[in-house]
Length: 294
Image 1 (cartoon, rainbow, N blue to C red):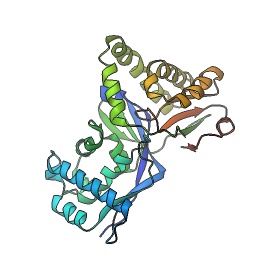
Image 2 (image 1 turned 90 degrees about the horizontal axis):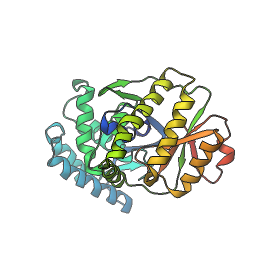
Image 3 (image 1 turned 60 degrees about the horizontal axis):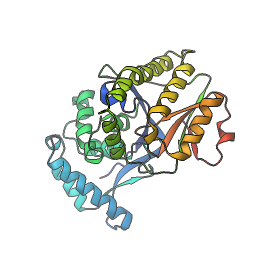
């Protein structure tokens, strides 16, 4: 029987790309969007498509290192009787739709109770399963969805956070209305890392600036505005391929007037982007976009 437990979307507040090079990262659940497993004997087109994708995931797990920790037979039996994933998480948006799906599968079909797993073990297992969708996964997206808590990833260790407080500013996600492919963006990034100049910039400057933002945010430092501005600037200058044209103009405007700063929300290329508003004027300036406050 399905319990219809909801698994929420996530927002990668800091750590995009850097997390693959052991930078710090903060990711948090975003409850505006969610998904859950369901079964239905009457299968419409949408349900059939979801069921087919889950069958592909089942076959992937069957040939992966995760197969011994998942109740494969139970998973297969439910697939044969109309298992599907109901979700309002926008696909190709950077909000972790595949992570929520993977978290729901792990919750339902894991062989051991989750209390028997260390958090790192859970992350690694989720990473294996989610690699079906992205080619390479840190495992953080499905972990945030599974635990339903903000996570700090630092020095290759995971710390659960109770709450993230934004003092003197607001944080929004803004919808570019353009689909994004995480797999495609990661490939572009990996190609950029083959360039020695970019690799040096990323390793020595980008990661440091990302970590500064996290540290300043966590201690409510007055230095946060300066660090997020710098991160916004160097991202705009060095990650142009990851920023759609309709976002570039408003990104640049924020840097010029210093009222807000933007950054990638995940891999970029489309989907949602993060916006840090320091003058409480965003809703008036972006009426043509859909925004959600986080």
